[in-house]
Image 1 (cartoon, rainbow, N blue to C red):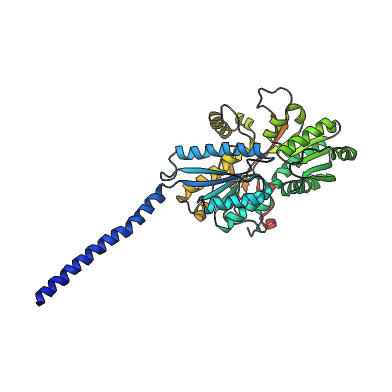
Image 2: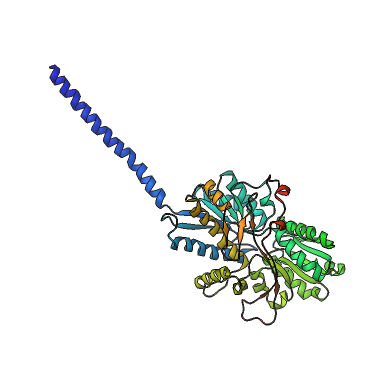
Length: 418
């Protein structure tokens, strides 16, 4: 073989290698290009674990209805760079273990980018433990004091709902000067109930209120008859029902039937629209309590009217409940964070959410810097039994505490530096 032939063969081999290399490079980059394209069009999955079964099911189902409106609103506006949002609803069964399992599945199996939800002080802490460890944003839409404390908190933890300290404090400041200062608590025996009592007693201390008894019952109790004679014998000025959902319905109905209202004013830290609808006007007649939202605010708050109209349109003229509205706000805050951050990265979205000044449905709100607690108004309502315009006109707004960080526990008390 001549030197020239050798050079021709080497050149040919070199051309073949270059062609193969180019083909290989093309093949190697094809999946990469596909992954970029799919990432740009993939849905933004938002996990939504709530107790669809159990004592709080009515409230949870309304949370889902309102959350779907926030998802639709985001998608109808074009989503994020064309990426649509998807709501992944899961049933926590009002059980902390179940809530943790479902949350883990949402993140690991379903690839949820964010988690919003919960309806229990206990389940939200178990959800938060999972999301915090995996650095996934969790925006809680249920009341809890503990979730703001440094031992349970992380930069990915947000609390859209009121907390018991805010709620109980507002109701105490309204009720104790009006109705009297000798107080009995009927308390659901878990974190929510305990935290509510603590909030009432703390506010009540400066008002001269005295606790006669804190009587505790298990979640889901159907019969309260064993507690009522003891309450009657104590003859309190105020009976505070520190319970929720079906428990509030049953306890208020039975207290009314027992005749406790003759000498005692019944107060509920959270006076639920769904509970009032379920128990009726007579059972709740004269009961006073706090709420994060009442649809009747639409007469004076334009954002409430806009939200109510969207809900009515989607659900055959029905109006949203207080906890339903939190489902809407919880989703909307996260998705607005995505838009503001121009990213779905949890840390970037967290930073954007921390800077939000928003008015989704009830007036001005913002997340406090140190603990991501939503600073917002607390509405005081009294249940109606007369003069109702229609079946939804169940409450009269009798007071309101405007958004004020002074009504929260301090950052230092919660263990935060600032």
